Amino acid sequence: MDLNAVTLTELRYLLALAETGHFGRAAARCFVTQPTLSVQLKKLEDNLGHQLVERGPKGAQLTPLGEQVAEHARAMFEHLQAIGDLARGIRDPLGGEFRVGLIPTLGPYLLPRLLAPLRRRFAELRLTVVEQLTATLLELLAHHDLDAALLALPVEASGIQVAPLFREPFWLLVSEKDPLARTKAVSEGDLRGKPVLLLAEGHCMREQALSVCSEAGSNPLADFRASSLETLRHLVSAGFGCTLVPALSVPRMREAGACLRPFREPVPTRDIGIAWRRTYPRPMAIQAFADFVREHLPRNLVEPLPSGGAAKV
Image (cartoon, rainbow, N blue to C red):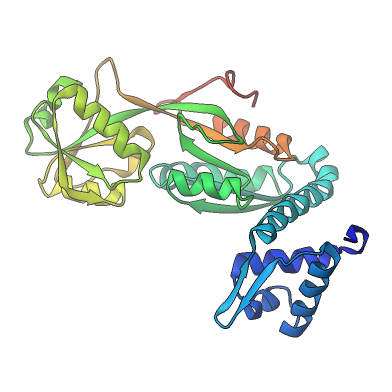
């Protein structure tokens, strides 16, 4: 084994192959020919003394050792990127690339409040936004494909650190023909016996809504499994039932045929936090982004949360 002979180029080629699963696509990503990439990967295997890639007629698959080497290489390149970002970070903690994920019940309603001022504040920021369900975002974090994610709490995942950002009340969206549309506010008890529309499985808000339904004795409808709050909004307007919506979505939930009503105390809520890997090399970037989110929250809709607890961010 000759570790001194291993080059960054070889490791970059291995990463490209791990992410594409195909020699041709990996070569195109690295702007080299396929024979060049193959020769360099074979050289990497020879230097390490082990097979890293299983070559087949339909593509390529990394061996278990190859997967481990690729994971270490991914972390190494992330740290190399962080070295380059250090100087920028002194004057601009969010300078350079920053990849953030958001759950679908948050992204469309929070991002419009952040993007323009974020660009003005951090001129050198190269932002990438990914909208996915919680499980997928945590997987992307763990595999170094995201730097941070905004999720509904609690979040428990190995190697992931979390800090709270804000508490968001739920509102009730009902048909204008529903008797609750004539009230100023509702209670959880008002949902007893009501047909409640839910998001599809995998959405964390589905579980939160089910919890409220269980407490209230309402009737969650299994026949409708919407993939977005926008779909639920149209179903409510058409008279198929009522649903819970998060406060940040309220300004966009106005719909002919539907009414929004706040809850009386105790108000059902959800907590939103920021998650990142414990080994992430740019904690100042996490801090800067978390502070920026708290600064730009609409105080009439949500309550900022102190960063104490599991993480100081």
